[in-house]
Image (tube, rainbow, N blue to C red; front, side, top):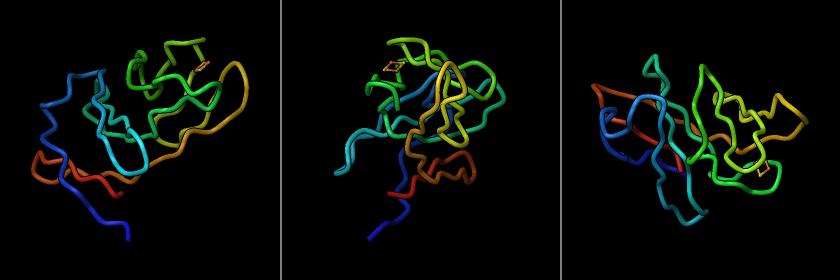
Length: 102
Ligand code: FES
């Protein structure tokens, strides 16, 4: 059954960076934007499975390191150059602590 798990503090993730959380369903990439928004996506690009956690975060998107697809962090949707969708995980921040629904 899905549940909230605490994965660390917001400052554990560099701004415009990510860290991965290993789960029974595979790795989840947890991103922090320049505005300190936190998003979580399956660490698998909808194109060919590239590690989104190693991509470049810019604005509210991440660019996959493999072939430069741009993925919306909030929805997991690929916005360029083609269509696809990465799985989104629910995430919330409470008093600087990050919780992930897995
Ligand atoms: S695997 Fe991500 S752009 Fe190709």
